[in-house]
Length: 297
Image (cartoon, rainbow, N blue to C red; front, side):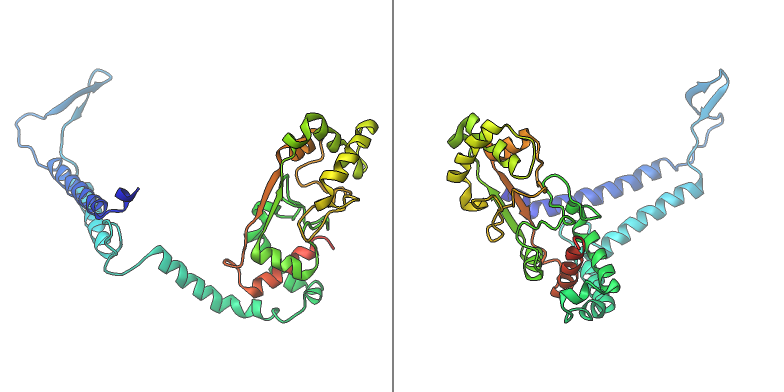
């Protein structure tokens, strides 16, 4: 891939761009030459037997519009980046403009966020203004996965149910938002075999009151006690410290259908909650934490 980062491509792009503009100008000039002839010249195209297309030069006003466009493009390429690695005389860049806009936004809105930074999360839950700001942060940063109402979807946790995989105290939720989380369910298909996986699936479904085969439930319970208790506990209520879900509630991250549960046990699952500490500062994460907790109040 190193050949794509050599200086050759900068020169190639610059030359190709300039040659294209010059070629357009020459072509325009060739189409603007006045023809002096005794008889009117046509292109040979006719419609409705007697409507002929004359081969006349472009109108002057139209030609000058194209010339102005070419001059504009040349001026633009001098002032702004567009010729390979040339940065333009104005020194403009997308990154620079973004930073300027972010700095301006921080000056305008930063004090609003900092006003609530020292307020405890429990107190923020009672402040409509703080929750309204938290909602906007949620819609901009979290709704893509958790949906605009926080109800989530398959593979993305429902934040309105109150069943937080890593714990729902303010400190834990704040850590989840800032640092992100990685949830991993190892595959047990080869270790348990098809029948063993199905038995465990039936037992797991029975823990939350779903319909299950009683015989397979008993068989699956024995396997669960040997294989799954290390993470999910003897009663299947999970372990927030490990991010192991509570299997006794009604909240299923990937779905509760038998086929889905079998797939989860056999193939395992990998879930990733991205860290937001590089996107949101502490004050914003503080407000976002309060709003997330408010969704399940």
